Image 1 (cartoon, one colour):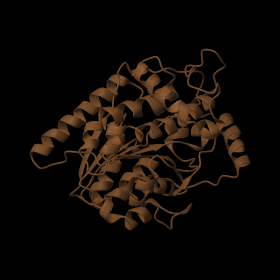
Image 2 (cartoon, rainbow, N blue to C red; image 1 turned 45 degrees about the horizontal axis):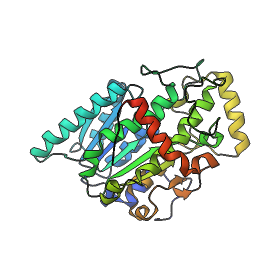
Image 3 (cartoon, rainbow, N blue to C red; image 1 turned 30 degrees about the horizontal axis):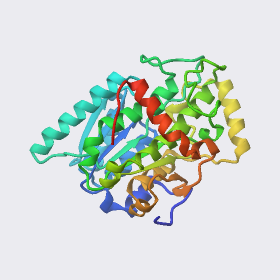
Length: 327
């Protein structure tokens, strides 16, 4: 892959390195709340003059400052905001269908007709209290961090296939190092064990690896030049991801992280690894790779490396969503 990038690289550095990979292209990013990794991702992309930026998240009014900032950078960018709750399969389907309708309508008039890069950035880390389930009856971390992005990606696959070089970037977390509590995905709703929010969060982030690699092994997607990568943006405390974690739990979490020796990053630095995965053309030869600190890395736990869990995860998601996808 292209170098030099590293821990201190910013999102702006990456876009400046690959301007031709941004200019005139269409990007969809989930979870671009102000001050977040997602926001820094789209703001950096704006400096590269993309054709379209699609912002997807649960509360569109919240993204108004981000939209305004994008337009202040480049008023010619087509910025669109879609309200999608990743914890709800119905909401994901409705949002994806609206995006597809807009893309087709625009395509007929010379507008955006494909998605070149899909960044599944949004996520939840809910340490407020007790097990919570989505409206579909799925543990909330798994529903939001795995099932929702999985369904959105599959629903938008036709738009990705229209791109000459489609790419999917899925964000994980350093929490994946905890691994799967029962060694597989047979108890995602914690019916056979005690629930802890951090274990649930960690398992949803292990799933990201298996989801990503499954995509890279689908013959029809390989034929369309689709590439997919898993990204760990680094340790970033000041985002909405930890807003529901109690002070007591946060103290424990910070003590745990301190023991790993991991250093904190800014959102701009965290977004850099996302953008390396989204833009670096050299990564085509490393399809399915995991990136950390802007470089290809090894997953932090053995469960994330297991190829035997890729197909079972996919089948589980199909069962939970009540829909199959053959690519």
